[in-house]
Each structure stands twice: as C-alpha cells, then as structure tokens.
Image 1 (cartoon, rainbow, N blue to C red):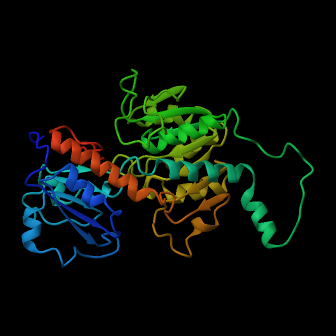
Image 2 (tube, one colour; image 1 turned 45 degrees about the vertical axis):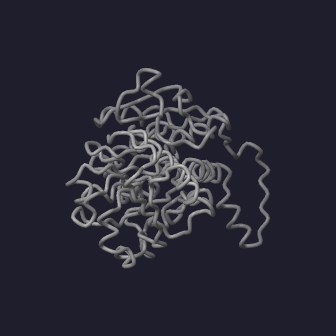
Image 3 (cartoon, helix red, strand yellow; image 1 turned 180 degrees about the vertical axis):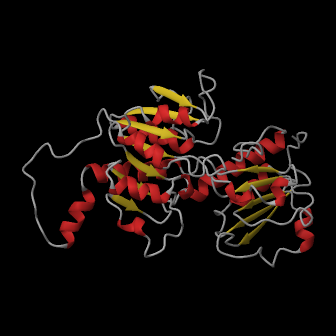
Length: 362
C-alpha cells in the first residue's frame, strides 16, 4: 500500500460509468479530498466496443483511480494507474487482461451491491416453484379457475434446508432471508472456516443485512476436492444455491455426477445466479427431464444469451430470466459507497475493500 495521503493530493479519478453521478457527489469528494481531481465520462463500457474518445491521451497518463466496467486502457496508456474499482461483483473478465496480469494495480470489485436484490430473486423463484405460481399464471392466461381442494398440495419453506455454495455477500443475504422464513442454512466455502474470526465477512455489506459475523449457518462445509463437494451435496438439501464466481476451478463444477448426488436424497431445487458455465447445461437438462432434481431457476446460462431454439427453454420445471437478478435502483449508490470506502482507505494507506486476489482470481 502507498503511504497515507489524506487529501489525495496528486490523484485523478475517472468515473467511467453510463450514468450521471448524484447531485453534489463530486463536490462532496472535493470537500473530503481537496487534492483529488475528478472527471466523469458518461460511457457504457458494457455495450461500447472501445474506450471514450473524449478522454485524451494526456488524461489517461495522469489518471490514478478508475471506476469502470469491462473496458480498460493498456498499461502503457495509463502508467500512473493505482486503483481500478469495478462496477461488477464478478471479476472473470479481468483475469487475462494485461492491466491485471502484468501490473500490481489494485482491482476491487463491487461485491456486496447485489446481495439484497439477488437474494430476493432467489427466494422469489424458489417460493414461486413451491407455490406453483408458473402453473397458475398459465391458467390465468387461459382464463381458467381450477381450485385445488387438497389443502396439503403445497410445501412451505419451514424446516427446509438450503445449501449455499459460495458463502459470500449474496449467499449471506440469502441465508438471512431463508432463516426469516424458517429454513435451515448450510454453507460451503472453498477454504475452511473453523473459527468465529474465519467466518466473518470483511467485504461490503448493506448496513443491517447479510451475515457479516457468519453465525447463521448451522453447518459449514469446505474444500476444493470432488469428494468434499459430494459430502455437501449429499446433505439432504431442499434448495441448492450456486453463488460462486467463474474461475478455472468452478467451470463445470455442477454436472451429471453432482446432480445424481442430489437425486439420492430430497431432489433439491437448484438456483444459479453465479455464472452459466458453473453448470454443465446438457447435464442440467437431463437432470430436470429425468427428475433427478425438482426444478431449477437460472438467471445465468451457458451459452448466454440463450439462443431461441435452445432445448434449455423447454426443460421441465425451469424458470429462466435474462441475467437481471442483480438489477436494482440502489445499485449505483451502493457502488459509489464502495468507491468512497476505497478512496478513504487509499488516503489512509490501508488495504482496499473487495480487492481481487491475483492468486484466487476473485
């Protein structure tokens, strides 16, 4: 880390985002950090194929802090860059970029901004399946009233068990909501978390939400070996939530062998909000159509976008949405909260929040 620089004198921040900062935001930064120069370019790095032409070469040479999506300058073009704050929680798109691989520039994610809305989406789709909402919506479109006289035809969530594969900020908010409706929580992490200190989460969390102390799971699992994952998947799960980032280790993590483990017990309902390639799509279709699992809700797919004629659309008991579970009108304000924390830590010479590990890739 760099030495303390309370006024951030000599630093220049570029806000490369497709929206206008809130009124007064830049003025507040100037008041807090009098030495910080701030420039803004309204540019969608997710849709555009290049960086904005209105940022001059001389500007890139003096920019030290960058808020951006998946578009970056070359290391040569931005020789003084020290901190890149990403707009997304995932960092898979930076792993092969020279700005990440060939420098020691700090990259920080927006991990934590998605927890509330994605947790809502996960519990919403699970309860929609439990209460047969897709079935009743089909009947509504047909103008058909078909009352069920069987009062026990619906299973509520009380005493059901959710297994959360990837107990990060999203997983912890899922745990909070799941516990509130009476579910039991099992957590899986790649590294062991045997102590209270190891179970704490130091990433960004919306105040009052999540599980920052790691006290909600009644059982913890961990590991990177197939047999360690198998133990978790064999734990009588009613709901399996996939919330892991896409890395070489997680690509194809859930395939036929894992679905067959789920089939041996309660035939879990599977939700994927991580990345599509974490799941083998052909094996997922086989698991759904073969009743190895009860159903699935996907906000991410492989391939993505999902082609119109792809058989996954017609798989049994499936809900698919087009990668929208993270949408929220509070997204940008939470993102700027993380940026503000990292600006403060830069000024104090402290370690950044949500910094991407070059060893782990997230």
